[in-house]
Length: 330
Image 1 (cartoon, one colour):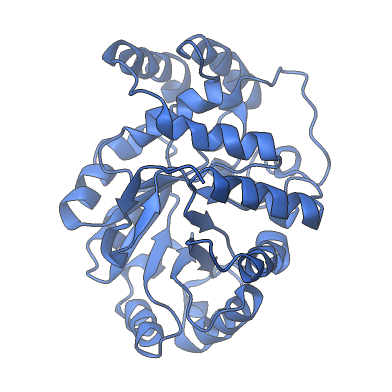
Image 2 (cartoon, helix red, strand yellow):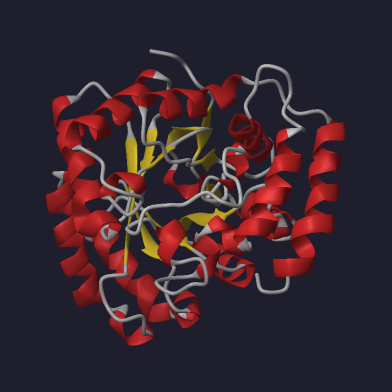
């Protein structure tokens, strides 16, 4: 088993690998994945030093959680912190974020994952009003008191939501979209989280695969892939698909980004390395649908830090190609 750098995940007090394993794709929302293939991906991640899995109760209607639960039951030696999410199983109105619903969703996730106490539960990009509700945090504290969850956190769409959550003393971490095409969290969110002792989990690190440099403007995704049906936010927040960037714009920018990859590193690994070295980031959670992808993602943790010239080039590319299109929307 390969050793990987570990960082403390905010107020959980537990250490996790700087590269985690995102598991949205294992639920089937990126195309069908066989159970044996999913187990192979998780096994490759653990063997590569990954100690952090991220999932949600709606990924494949719970299939992602179930796969993780079955995998860890067969691998009691795997020291993995599992973060799941709740809240998207109901209409997205603040009135649904109440203790009774939390308990119902929590019961389902605990059954799916095969555990009495969930390591970390994140509110799954709820309506903005939820982040300011005292009653919501009281209910989350109750789940901790009942030993249903060890800690709670939030997953957000906007920087304003992140800053609101960071100010709450019980919030252990914030999950936010961060990648070389999404720089706004660097301005205030990461410094505020570091000052408060709140962990930062970077999601959508490859802008839904754009930053892998493997797509062209003619690339076609399957009909059950969110990169087909959610490009304009038809099913959920647009930022979750290609970081909210127009596909053609993203493909062109990704081709430029690929030229910044150092010798021996892929564009995807370069993007992950860029995220890892941003001050305040705890872990980045790329997805993987193959053993090779899981190993390559984990290998980004052992790359040398990118030089200042590369960091400057990323900023220049963002300011020129990405910021004019989407910065204000974020």
